[in-house]
Image (cartoon, rainbow, N blue to C red):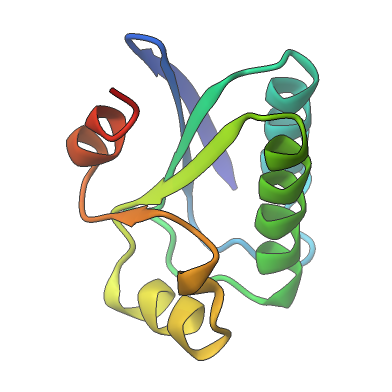
Length: 111
């Protein structure tokens, strides 16, 4: 899995490409852990090119969101495709996360 990290003003964008599944999580986990340790205050995971997310991927995202929230930091999601949105809905994680239709809206939500 490829993971790109960029900045949009004071917001850090993480963009994984491909499935977020067991055996493919190393790079995403490394990037999220690094951002969490550096006290990145505003983080958006842009999910537009995520083709699938299994329980290991969900666990990684939930773990990071929980750890960040405990320290007063924010993790939000954007641009979920129909498949990933359905996975978040079925697992009831949609209620746990702030999910936005696109990156611009997600970034603006921090203002």
